[in-house]
Structures are given as structure tokens and as C-alpha cells.
Image (cartoon, rainbow, N blue to C red; front, side, top):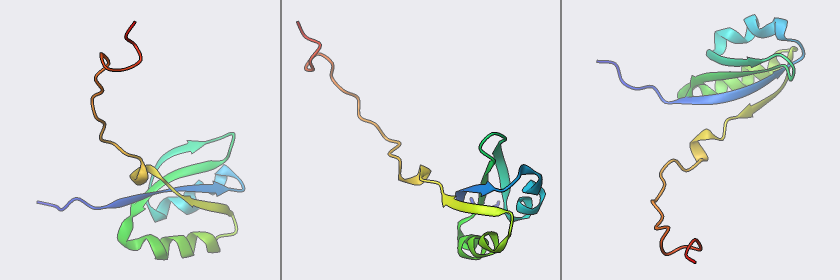
Length: 88
């Protein structure tokens, strides 16, 4: 059985979307935005430093941002609305 691979999302801003083919080899493309000309790409976390270095060397890449998805809390507590401000 295969192990679950930890991945990191990258937002890659390109000078033109015709360069998506060059970026495709660095990971799995999830989304491309034609108006803002960026690509959401997932790559393995263990290769992140090498991938960032290679992406920043490409002439077609304007900016690379790391996804903040892992920092968003995904567990929520159920609130008791009877004790809240909704009581009249």
C-alpha cells in the first residue's frame, strides 16, 4: 500500500498562460485563472525547496506564493446558541 504523500500548494503567477506547459512538470495543476494569469499547482513537500528554486529561475514566472491552506483551522466547536446573543 502506498503512503500518503504530503503536498504543498503553490500559486504561480505567469507572464502569459501559454507557459503552463513549462510549469506542468513541477507538479499537479489544479486550477488556472485566465484573467489573473496564475496557476494553482500541488507539489510534494519534500521537493519544495528545489521546486521553488527552479520555478523562480524561469523567465515566464513573475511570482510564486505558498498556499496558506494548511494554516487555516479545520476543526470547529459547536456553539450553544441558547447561551448566545440570540436570546430575547
